[in-house]
Image (cartoon, rainbow, N blue to C red; front, side):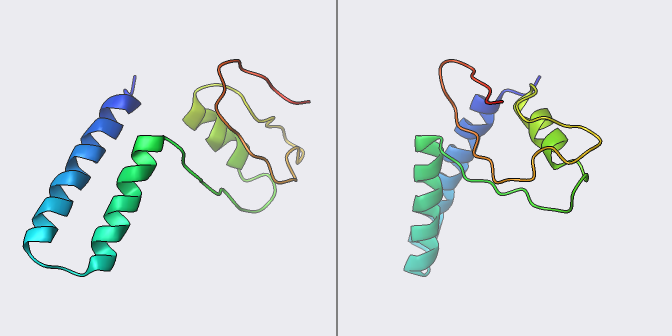
Length: 96
């Protein structure tokens, strides 16, 4: 089983180290700003991901697999032909 908290922690650590090294090398402020934004995303644990593609190509199945449980319906007929937002909550609640 993948421990995502460990991955987030390591990524955060690597980004801090990268920022420190780049600061010593006097690189562009834009790059350091981008790294800071990434660090803040990891701290907030809020990510925006867009999955797009043709009908019946496995997008919902991919999202369900990444989340570890069935959130979106996946069938042989198109079932999620709308824009869907999945957010974290303390109680799992599936919309019809």
